[in-house]
Every structure is written in structure tokens, then in C-alpha cells.
Image (cartoon, rainbow, N blue to C red; front, side, top):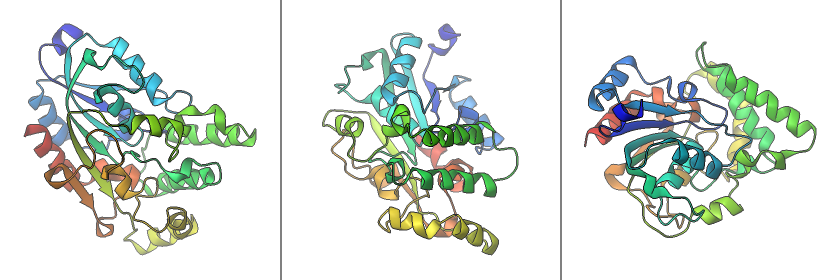
Length: 281
């Protein structure tokens, strides 16, 4: 119903790897979602897109070709969805995208790998799968099954030694070609960032994460704070790209005492309060 959506500013949700809009943002409470629907007068939409077999550039091109020209949006994105979002907002586009079709006022990055994640390197991709299977074990029941389906797919591909056939993962490789192109000077709208440093708080959960190799993945990250998938600083620190670093009131850092991991970020009450404040500002 584009005529109705084009009548005012739209709130757009963009999910991350191994996920869907529902899978990435189901942690937002009904109360928060109602406030968002009221704020945007019902103009709240999500972009479901393939995250393994397509690059963020291909995702962005598909979205730009699908929306009416001049659509005004605010974007809330998670994980790899942040790379898609930046392509929609960055000008001039290093990939030749016609970003004038979409008027993006502000974007909220939740755990976005704006500087990449070493877990997408061939030597560490099994560790990335461990992170997501750990998340499946510790999250409440009802987490969408497509996450597990995606993990199984990756395992099968790795079994054939064909990691390069998953360009959606390779786009998150630090210092890879995609991020080198994305992190170039230009201009962008308002950026906001949510980044977490995860440590389990519950004794049983600490043991589970320990068995899954939390200490090992911390070493992979060079012992810098991380949310099990993305280094905390990589979400908001200077990377050469337009709009970075994100700082001050535009940034929310979640310390280890909050127990927020990559896949539970939007269920955190402080995240939800901050999200409402940023979007109503």
C-alpha cells in the first residue's frame, strides 16, 4: 500500500544474518511496538532479504527498486542489516546506487559490523556458528527456526569447502573488498549506535557459554569487548566511512553487567527506552 505509506515518514526495520524481520526484532515489547505504530501512524514496515547468497549491495538495490521515489524513512537495523542501511543512506554511493530514491533521516545500528567481524574469516567461521548455536540454546523457546536452518546451510557449504559461495558473509570480512569500498568518505544522515560487551551473568549460562568457547572467541577478537559476534567498538568507532565515529547522545553502550548478547539486543529494556527517545527526538 505505497500511497498510504508515502503519506508520511516510514519506520523501516532491516534484519541481520541468519534472520528475518520477525527473528531480529521479536524482542521488542508489544508496548514499544504500539508506541512506534502510533508515532509513525501505522507506517511501520520491514525488509526481509537473503543474507547469505546475496551481498548487502544486492539487497540495497532490490529495496531501492521496490519503493516509490522520494519515500521518507527512519531505519532500525540489526547486525549485517547495518551494512544494507548504510548503502541506502550514504552519498555519493561508492557502489553507484541511486540513493536519491530514498530519503533516510536517521538510522539506528544495533550490533552492526561496520568494521566487520573476524568470525567471517575462513579460520573462524566455525566459531561464528558456535556463537549462533549458543544463542539458540540460551534464548527462550519460540525463536524462529530459520536461524537454525541457516546454520545448517552454512555447515553444508563449509563441508564442500565453498565459503566463497556465500558473498553475504564475505561482506563482513574486516579489510575485505566490500568494507574497503563502503568505508570511504562522503555524507550521511543521522547515525545512532547500540553496542554490547557480553558476559553471561547466570552461573549455568556461564558454564554453557564456556563450553561453547567464549574464552576462545574472545581471543579471536583480540580480547576486545564483543557481543559474541561483533566487536563492540566496531559498531560506532571511526572507520573512514561517512557518519563515523558515532558518539555522545547518539550512542548506547551496554556493559557486561547487562548480559546482552548479539541476538538479544532489542529485548533489553534500556535499548527499548533509548530507541523510543531517539526516534521521537
